[in-house]
Amino acid sequence: MKSIPKPQPNEYDPYAIMYIKLLPDDGLVLQHLAENAEMMKKFFLSLPKEKWEYRYAPGKGTIKEILLHIIDDERIYAYRALRFARNDATELPGFDQDPYAVHSKANERNIESLIEEYSAVRNSTLALFNNLPDDAWIRGGKANDHFVTVRALIYHLAGHELHHLNIIKERYLP
Image 1: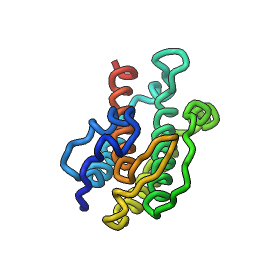
Image 2: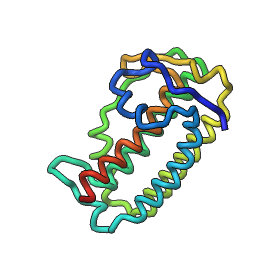
Image 3: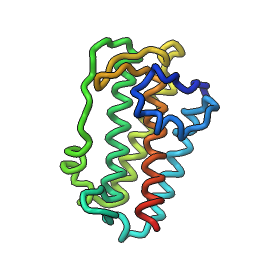
Image 4: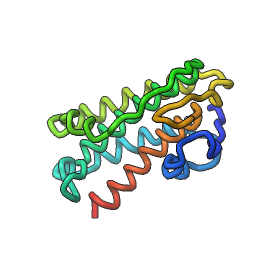
């Protein structure tokens, strides 16, 4: 697999460090994405059914909503990466994750359909990133009023799911 060094702080919005720092500094982010997909699927399928719609506090997402949030976020960040990798200079808007969760109706879905969608999105993400030319990784553009490179976007989405995995383990599975 390709080696893609971690992005420098000037390549992403400062808040994204919370995700990027969750990944090793070995350049193997694509490998980690592939391996994490298997780990995440096993983890989610191992959860007791009664935990899937549990909220640890009022207004917090259920595990189903968190999984669909991970999927939505990955789609958006992969789309941004595609645009910037192809040298599209159009500034991209941000998004408000809260309405996405409300309108997703994640809790009306079964676990298997969520896992199937997660797998499909991850396979698509890996197909995109595994086939980018080497010079695309340092291309970038403005998204949500901040400059970001393609490599920062992939590190963001890889760390984002680990961030939510940690939250689930800490707050949903005491």
